[in-house]
Length: 252
Image 1 (cartoon, rainbow, N blue to C red):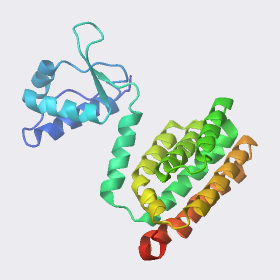
Image 2 (spheres, one colour; image 1 turned 180 degrees about the vertical axis):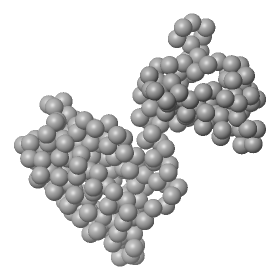
Image 3 (cartoon, rainbow, N blue to C red; image 1 turned 90 degrees about the horizontal axis):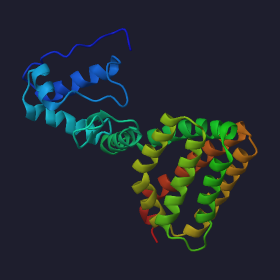
């Protein structure tokens, strides 16, 4: 239990629903609520915080949508609103939506991806298990299928990069990788569909992915990191930016 104790206190009635969220967050940050703990029942929260039941319900709905809370129906000891044991999906969703709505410049996204995935590849080269390597190979095998639709190719591409991040053993980095990849999916597909020489681009991407996999399999962390960074920067510089900035030149 953390030494700092956050008390349940009534909140001002202005912006009530946001302030209820803040009170619950204080309990989590203070260590008074941990994974698997149940929140007090709605009626008790209403009394503790001095707010309406509607405000409490709205705050709980927001936290549940974020993946922080999970509701269990019933009357037994496992029922009620519980702090989620695996909030990764909620974090990924929030990051993905934030990136989409913030409209970051493509250059900023590329820089973040290159930095993040370079670290992930280095960790994967040091830590990847046989199961992790098998997951990467599966993505490559599916990507190597001749005549693969561009949407399917992009999904296999995403799976490969996510498999590397997960092999690194850093859950936060993996979640951030998933979020970033999901956020740029539409941009990548738009570029793919505007390419007139898609097959040559796909061949280039396949070759780069296989080289990254080989470096990870051979436990060469430095080479794996270099290859991933060059792959991300090169692809966006040579293909995505060129196509999106001059669509008439790359239109099929």
